[in-house]
Structures are given as C-alpha cells and as structure tokens.
Image 1: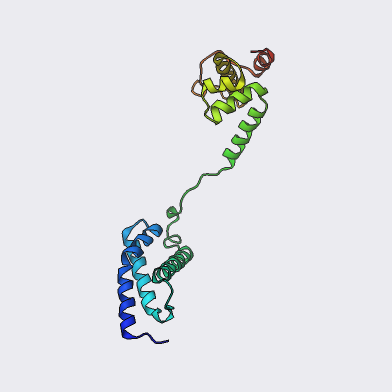
Image 2: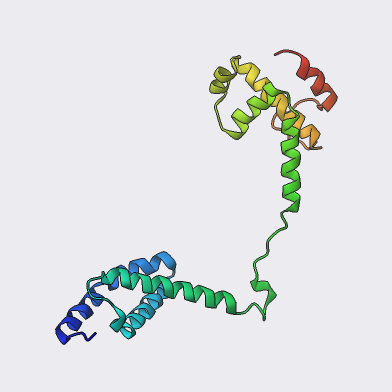
Length: 191
C-alpha cells in the first residue's frame, strides 16, 4: 500500500502534534526527563521507520503509544539482563535484611494476642490495631471508659511479659513488675 505525498504530509504533521502527548506518556515510565525524552526519540524513530505498517483509519496516537510501551518493556528486559556494574562492584547491589526474625517475632506476637482473654483481646484489637477511640470502644464493649483503659493496659502488659520485654521503654504505662501468673489471676477477676 503506497501513501500519497499529501497523506504522508498530513500524517507527519500529526506525528509532530503528538510529541507533547508522547512526552507526557513517557513520564509515566521514567521520572528523569532525560530518560523520558530518550524514550520519545526512540519511539519516533521506530514509528518513522515502520510508517508503512501504519494502517489508515486507525488512531495514530494509539499506534504511537503502543510503540512507546513496547520500546520501554524491551529496554527493561535488556537492562535487567545486562545489569551494568553488578559484576564489577558488589556494593551496587541493594542490601536487604533477612526477614526470618521478623516472621518469628510476628508469629510470637500473634500467639500472645491469641492467648489473651476475649475481653482484653477485643479492646487491644479495637484500639491498637483498628485505631478506634476509647469512647467508641467503651460503647462497643458496653463498659466504662476506665474499664477499657484498664483492659488495654493489662493486655499490653501481658503481651510484653510473654515476649520477655522488661525494659522501661517497652512499657507504655509505668507500673509494678507484671508477671504472667499475676495477669492470669487478674484476668479472671471481673471488670
């Protein structure tokens, strides 16, 4: 299919008109303006080289955006394969801390929360996890706000005791040394 000179001029003008839209679209791929402009330039070169494959009647903008997206994904593939500098310098690789310890700690905290009496666990989850206010928690639990604060404090102290936290910084409210046995005796007492 041959393109007449008048239609080629019209299509070339529409390509030029699309440059601002192509730049904006390139910025979604790259934050660095230089990299975005390079992507626009590569897209324009590929579009002009394969202009004979453009089908009249389709949207030029969609065709150009598809070329840009495919060019970007090709660059990402090539870059990930080449990984410049990785062979030369180990310090270039990002250091990631091992997550095993955090996994174990989170499981210990979950198990400690599961062992709380239901009324203490409920208050702890409402306030500590969901961020519900003391007043709302008191309404939900059907008790006084002082009772809510007491249950929350006892739940926190029990979890800290089970996790072996004894430092002053880990205690939210200062108080006497709290033991698990004392907690269990206090937990059975109605509040």
